[in-house]
Amino acid sequence: MSYYQLICTVISLLLNMILIWLIWKKSPAQTGKYRWLMMYTACFEICWGLFDLPAEIIAHSVGCAFVVFRINRPDSLLNNEYSSWVVLVYTAIFGASMAVFASHFVYRYGSIDPSFGKKFTSGWKLGIILIFPVIFSFWWAGVVRYCFWPNEDTKEYIRELINRTVGEDVENISYIGTMFYQSSGTNDLDFNSVAWIGVCQMFLMVGFSMGCVFGFGTGCYFLLSDQLSILSAAANNFQKQLFYSLVLQTLIPLVLMHIPITIFFICPMLNLDLDFTSVFVASTITLYPAVDPLPSFFVIKSYREAILSFFRKVKVIPPRNTMIGTYTQNSAVIYNTKLGVKII
Image (cartoon, rainbow, N blue to C red; front, side, top):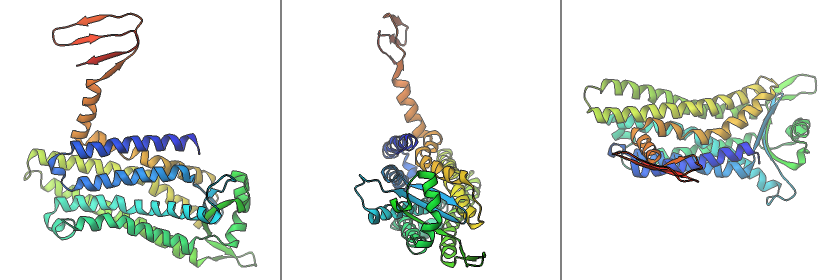
């Protein structure tokens, strides 16, 4: 377990728990059922962080192969077989995240377009939106299980990589991965059709996610522009706050997840051996849950004011060597030798 991973997990847990409290206590009435989708996402990111920390997943690519693995240490509670399922669950959680991004934009569009909302996002249909991440997780895990499960060819191909990068024998790790090309015995490389079928399905899921994000996001923008003269100023402001928050929360996974994982797949598909991509992917995916809640804090006015109000009420002032009392007509400031608290 690295300090970087531990710090990111702690920050993720803290910020997402604060966000859940803000959603529950400080959401305006206009939020409606969207608050449940926001809480769903915050809880998802908490679960992701809690799973990612002990799982200690490592990702690498070399030549025409990629591998996602965890080291089976002598004192581990899990044997090699169960450890492989930990890696599989990790990939399933990543797959679910693809649908989580898309579901927000679908629901936001439904809240602005009444006819679309009545057909697809109102009432019990919200439950269908919440189920989509579960469907994507099983789909992604199914692709991994049947297309990227360990085999002898991949095992021998990554043996030197594992020994060089983590100093372990390949027998001491549990992994998923594949080779996009296989040697035919005549110095030629043949397509590994199973691997290509698997990665095409993953690109289909990523493409569906980004299609929903950009398609419904663009629709939200134009609908909001058209409704500026119809809705009240308060309703307009809140809708724009949610939209801008959503845009920022989409740029974060786009930069920290979609682009890195695309590069991670494309390099072995093109038989390129770039070591920096492996470090980049591992770092950005771990960072994602820690920074994703931030746009909601800064953009949504009621959340921002609640946070600022907390810091205005209680300010920790640096220690002083003497006790000094200062009084004005409207305020009182008391400094203690150890700690000062300012009430305004």
